[in-house]
Length: 97
Image (cartoon, one colour):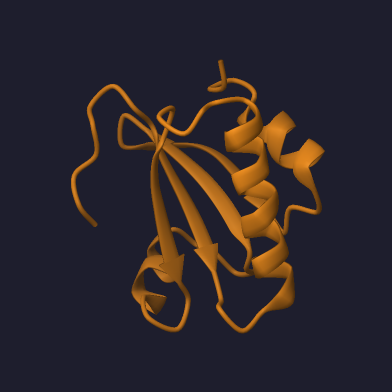
């Protein structure tokens, strides 16, 4: 993974391009970040399970979609199978402006 800006946490979106729940979660995430004008809050990385299974193993991701916030090289939060904008917004609230 490319280096991130030191002052921004890394938001990792573990996904599968053939999974409908993942596509919906991606849309929910985009809405939350756009609505709150928080596009620059995170360094966003999208990890597709079929392309980087090593990263799913490394971060112990068992289901997609999964959102994970890494700050200071420490996993600060993990949300498995988000079901909507409100759930994502609540999960990301500590970092959103």
